Length: 436
Image (cartoon, rainbow, N blue to C red; front, side, top):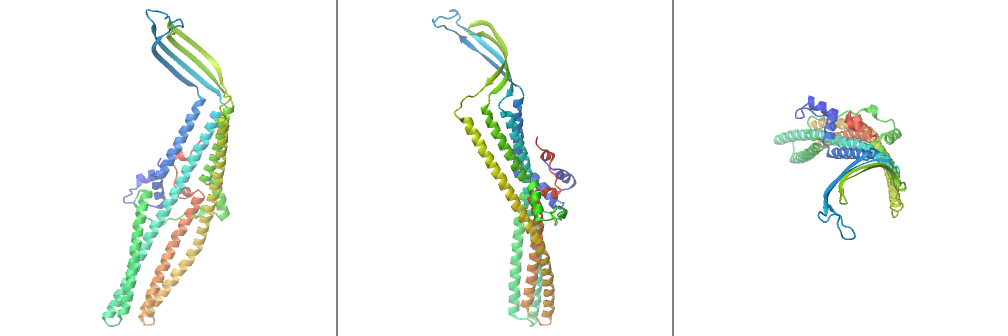
């Protein structure tokens, strides 16, 4: 059940030394996921159920054999042979039957299981889509945490440089204790923020290992395929409804439920079979010697009354059709909602990102100006420290928005059911073959 992506990666690269891309992480994670493994097993199980049901199309052969002691006594109380009242009886028989008509029970059941198997295949693809989104999210979160950690380290370094500068000036009598206390407090705050960033990075590393089964080494910022993005939210919703595997699976479940109704209605019809019987027996009914017979017969079995059990089963399956229809409607609404939310997030974050970039640029210009003015005594130390905090927060906000914007694009691909396609991760061949 390993994807082609995994095959060439395993040959060309060593995971202990090679930087792992987003696409490689998703390919690793799909093969590593117990959720996908469980769904794949269920898919294969339903296929075997369909094969088992199809077996009723073929002749059924049964062999029967028996051996034992038999004695016969008549109503008069006498035995056939007073000297030897019993014989060793043997039986050997074969029965071959061919189903001709069973009220469409077999055909309906085979069709039902075919729809269910195809629904499970599409559910497997949907599971892969959702697992891929989880991996994309943790990949971007881990990469963002690394970037924010670097920002925090840079922030601490800059505050420590200012602290050393103020300390030198104080020793020369050019600065006050309040200035030193002020920068000391800011250094402590920056170091606390650094520790929080380190802790977040450790947590995300553990989550990455759980989902991917690999260490997050050398992560790089991914570039999503913008050509796959829809032109509007209406186009996105239309493509999602048409292509999303969960919706397609729900539609197949509805068809399977309808076939179940037809299968249960088979109880209203007779069952017709062609049967061949052949027996080779010995010493039957205390008659010493062979007792052989053979016959071929057309049989009919018609259930005239079974306590309304068939009616109840038909009604029960009819309600399952209504349940499947409601699930399909709910699935379509959830997919539509998810697509709209993903589109809104992508669109708004795209606008917000450009504004936050302007914020970073303006904050940096203000910081440089404050530093120059502080050097000539026109600004206080507090002004400089506040300016640095403003730059740090502006950069952090921009980083958060940048990664959230990228994640929103992948969320939109997932909502449309094309995430693995957008990542160029190819599914195994058995996932791609439609169940007939």
